Amino acid sequence: MASYNRVILMGNITRDIELRYIQSGTAVADVTLAVNDRRKSQTGDWVEETTFVDVTLWGRTAEVAGEYLSKGSPILIEGRLKLDQWEKEGQKRSKLRVVGEKMQMLGGRDGGKDGTPSSQPNSEYSETAPAVSAPPNGPPDEDIPF
Image (tube, rainbow, N blue to C red):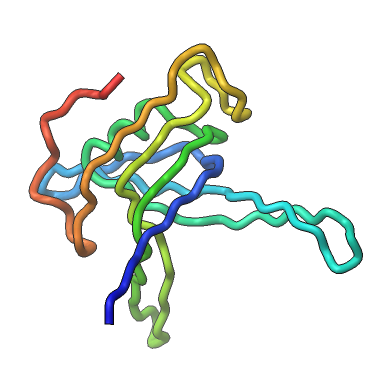
């Protein structure tokens, strides 16, 4: 049976990005997005619901995010779902997260953290994320595309 694993999210970063490098020298950034949903309840009132989603960025995408984004920055992420499983103190644990493969910075270079457009064009950066939790075979030698 065929399967398809794609996720597209647009939201705001909940805390400043901490960039780290693994032994191979590949950059990794863990980002949490706040994604808001507005819908009508059964009573007809509008209800705001926020979902917090953990996203992992790799390589040059992680470096760009660490350099240009901070708490409150609006971004669009495209990627795939990944289930992490581990055992802690004898109990099995699991967590669903997104492995980001494309990142679109929204709001422009002048800040725009409130999501309002600026005079600067939006910037997109993408890099193929690793097929498994292991990092890719080293970062690409590309410059920031803007």
